[in-house]
Image (cartoon, rainbow, N blue to C red; front, side, top):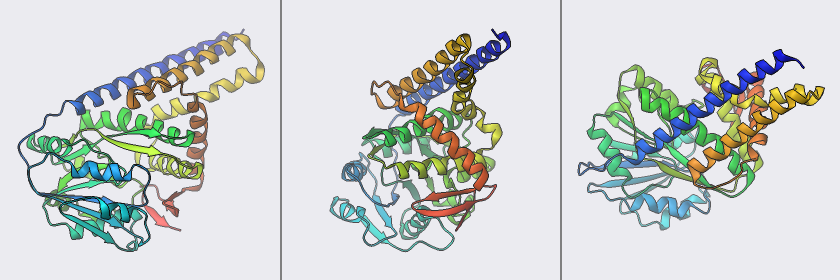
Length: 372
């Protein structure tokens, strides 16, 4: 029996357990905070800009959720597409928005597809207050009121965390699990404690604040433009507060779509978070390397410890899945997802490239993208 190996694995298990406990507690704090944001009678005219690409079975419900807001001031809805045959256009056309614009413009050179759509939407907006919200988001009918409540408290930027749910296959579940963990458990808790980041699914700010941060063009080609904007806001000592939770129903996802999502996530982690901010992820997503030595050398004692390590990871993944989606599931998919993300992370370290909306980019050390 190699007591040193057993001791080291025991220490590792303790570290992993502590991280899992820390992250799950952070998620519960974020969910509770967002749930308890009050509504307000304060309101002002707002332009909701939705960079849009494609559609799925949830698109009509998602769009309608932004129409049915309990809100007293004028709301301008701007859908911004980059292709005339986009399937989302017909859905946007039939939704009864009282004040709606549907834009179709080619991608501006030097911009990512999403940021180009945002740029066109910004040009067409009429109101000082802006909300940028992805087309796959679903909002409760008091979302705008709660966002305004945070502005009344003194926020300059209000950013909303998303819960990714309603998955229909293994690839969409793997996507939802890692995004829920990262967005709510890591990024969300950092916003709650430090006000230092912005999540791009849905966030609100004024045109004046955007100009104070250097304008939209400053963030036109980042792998995570929302994080870059949040960093600038934090450095400028602008208050960033969490808004109400929104939902992002996922549905079906292909394996290639998952690879693209994971590739972007790993590129962001490497370039915009850095090693010192990734250690929690590294511990979580490389635990399976600890399983290899006992599997090779068939050490019974170490195999037992490795078994408990794997069981702990499975329990944690299943619990977080229940916490965010409400579904009781033994999340055995986590093992496949962990291995897949680990190897894509290594790939991103070596090749410095990624895909986004079927376009290929080279990623520099600051997270900026160059089309290739």
